[in-house]
Length: 338
Image (cartoon, rainbow, N blue to C red; front, side, top):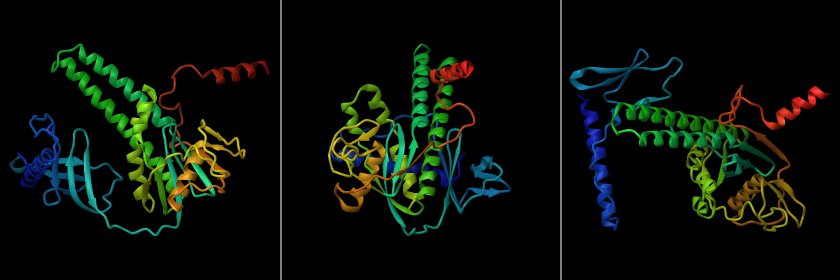
């Protein structure tokens, strides 16, 4: 029992899928298949003609069955007119209409995305380096948990009670990891927006094909990086984001133009420039965005601020729970001897 508008949205999505598969087959993609599987769960869309917000509750119409009431948490107000509500598995998505305000750019920055360093941004005078260790640990935790659950499911009969229990545990774990990554990305991009307000940013184009030349672990880290999400968040929190190619930006010295592969700290053997490699990369990306080429004779920002996307009162996610690190043990031993 669904509302008429919800039924129309389902039919429209089905027809859109048919048209997309037809176009792919005309282009020669014979492996493309039309929708054939009956999904166990499916998102339900409620348009603004049916969904209502009354007294802190979302009222979602279901035809003759009445309305489904979803309580809106206290302190949450809609920023604009309610346009669409999507009822998903375990959560509700609300789409509102907002006015598109054009931002006037006040400065230009270069942004380098990575794994160990989530975001490195600079305007040529100062640089902001945000650690990506927390996001990296979250992805690693997700991969280990996923493999463990899938291995346990392989020993169960599909559809049994124990298999379904593991399936629910898997979805809960994946949802938790997804929300944690989303929170880290939002807080990291907010720090960039606060440091460089209303700036136009040039972002180095993520090149995941480079993972083919890496080892298995590094290739997995590069392929599972949240680069597309970061670019989208930077695009609407700043005055737009422009993706440009980034070949040799982390290998070229901005002072003398010498090219050499470096580790986490860039040290030029020709002119003696010493700076974090990610700062050198975002400096060269800024030059590529402004001039279109890597020109020598530029300076590396001296004011470099290192920070984390979040500040936890306790241990970091992914760290060991019980015993302190070796450096902490040495420090405690030296303190007792002193």
